[in-house]
Length: 310
Image 1: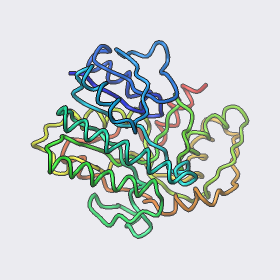
Image 2 (image 1 turned 90 degrees about the vertical axis):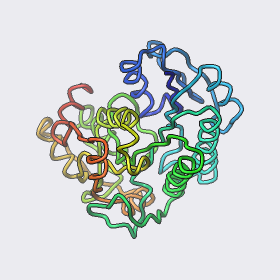
Image 3 (image 1 turned 45 degrees about the vertical axis):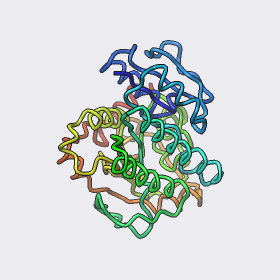
């Protein structure tokens, strides 16, 4: 069974590739990227350069390597998407449409990552339900809602096994931030170690759901391996592991670096995006339907991040 990862050199893709190689074997993993090639020692059978908006090129790759499952990670993130909304819509929506069309023709399963950005200011912020009002106020969020609906449509109309997760902010030490609203929770660690000071672009009391990357990777693999007969939703599962504010994260870091300081210079665009997102999602559907259970809470994540980044 061959697995293809688009956006393979991004924050999620660069860690999903070795995890898939460990589970299925490196000779069963194909990496697809647009601008950056994966590291030379990345365990994959092949790397293919591709603009995800080129459906014909994608189709050739899928046919050549007999792909059975596509993990579609190529997208522009929230803050970058707000700066370039037309490009974001082009990449995020046309890219997903191409993936689903190729999956329909070649009978591939599809993983699609949605986000807390799929919710909006009128969504309940605490214990945000799995099924609720979704009226996002950003082009990134709108593309995620449309993507969720498109995946459901292809599953219902054509039988494409399309599954997905609504990720919270993701924290990783392996790749630099990629233009997301929750990037502060990655940047802060390098700043703490190097300068003992960090200037945060969100307010001190901005509470958001977060997840350590090892949990995110495990969730993707677990969901795609789940028995489809046990899934009621298939797509856009709420998942979370921890919920905190910048000040709470800074306080946890101070347990390891006592002289660390944080101050604030608010970015109104990213603060506005964060204010429209949930503070904490209800992920009981994922826990019930396919056994979701995170391993890392805030103290465990901070300890592990600092251990690796030192």
